[in-house]
Figure: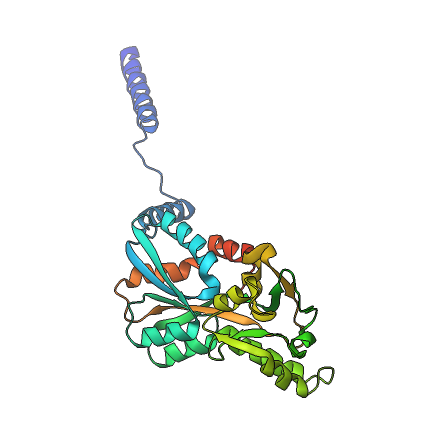
Length: 292
């Protein structure tokens, strides 16, 4: 009798011990919670998504003359981010660049100092996709450092004997200058005769804004109209005279990929880089204003 009872007790103890061993061994696996599953899926997605690979090859950028210095700085940063890529430039007036592209010049990117020439290129199907606005600029009057003609205001451009130099009418800064003169002439403070007087004082029409600037720097003219960014580059070699806000115009800079490019990926990458924080900081440091 007692042996039977001990045997039953022993079997009960063994059964309890087996239950404890199974529980401790983790034989039953817990189900994943929805939150844990979502987190794991997200982590896997991020890990599987590669970052954009650096582009390679040469990028030829046709850019407005006023972009000469800042674009060289930006190109250095772009090449640092893309060590296997190189950037070459052709700087000239936007109108000349548009014509060159139309005549099949080997360009990958076109950066204009106005929307008019970019619109021409787009209308002729020379640009791939939609151009991107990346900067703005403002025209100013510049005079030689010694300012022998005593130019102190926009009104002084009409003084008899004043030698004024502008860019040609089809060059963006030349077009902007003539718009400014028209606006000033419409102001009763200046009068309708103002335009005729200024136009009589023009001694040369230059091919681009840097050519205008060069004339002023060496004292071959008394005054000219350039961008404020050009005046900053010169430092103490020239002085600036502000144009009244009511008459001034804002220069807008668009950039786009040329349709005939042989390196579309690199060209598109350069265009995109112009809107990056690094490129925008360089433009701001050079005196350009943000596009938006």
